[in-house]
Amino acid sequence: MDDWINLLQWPAMAVTLLAAWLVGSAHHGRRKLGFWCFLASNALWVAWGVHDQAWALIILQLCLVVTNVRGAFKNTDDSPEK
Image 1 (cartoon, rainbow, N blue to C red):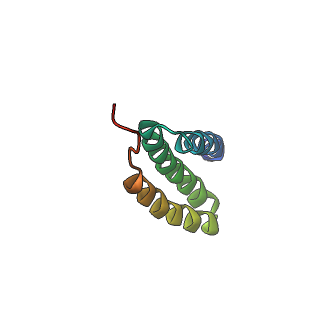
Image 2 (cartoon, rainbow, N blue to C red; image 1 turned 90 degrees about the horizontal axis):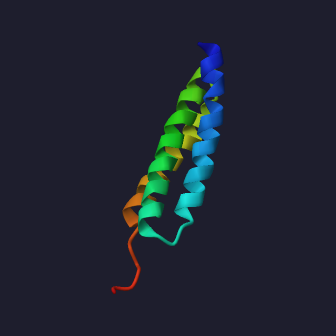
């Protein structure tokens, strides 16, 4: 079980990078997906952090959940009407 949990940090990192890429998009839908990816990465990091007792990382991820939820709600489609 320890090996599996230790490997969890790699998908967490990959999902975090994907989320950052998507949130930087000019397209509303991609940004929305990016915030969901960030929330998934927060969950992965918390799971890894609990196992490794990385309490500062867990607190950071919980704070980032708040900012990601805020970003998801403030994400608007500002594209011009066609």
